Image 1 (cartoon, rainbow, N blue to C red):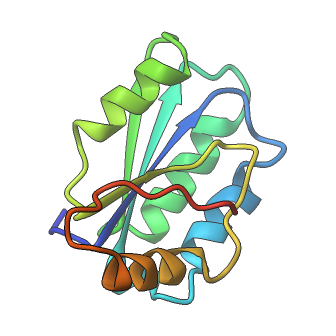
Image 2: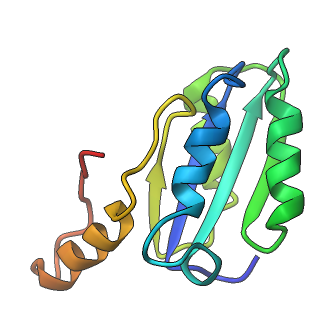
Amino acid sequence: MRGMQFSIVIPVYNAEEHLRQCIDSVIGQSIGFIENVELVLVNDGSTDDSGEICEDFQKMYPNNILYILQENAGSSAARNNGVKHTNGEIVGFLDSDDFFSKDVLSSVVEYFDSAPKDVEVAVVKT
């Protein structure tokens, strides 16, 4: 994957009920998903249909979505594994049962554009 402005890592474990909405909220960002966002989906050994959902989205957006399957090791391990595969200038995390508001990534860009240059971390309430 080429370098993107954002890398969003989602640890996935038995999340089929909410996963589509979660992923759609990243794809639907007003900043432009195709041009600006890579999505790293880390399946932490799900036993439901979460893996198939991840694979379907990865097939739809092969240049933007990376799908990783690992043995169950917990959400922290899944996040850490996902971070190893990011290329974005800004790395963010989203739980598989949550979703972003449409303009959250645009808000992050606006914040960093106006923040002092030594600010390297931001927390955004979705």
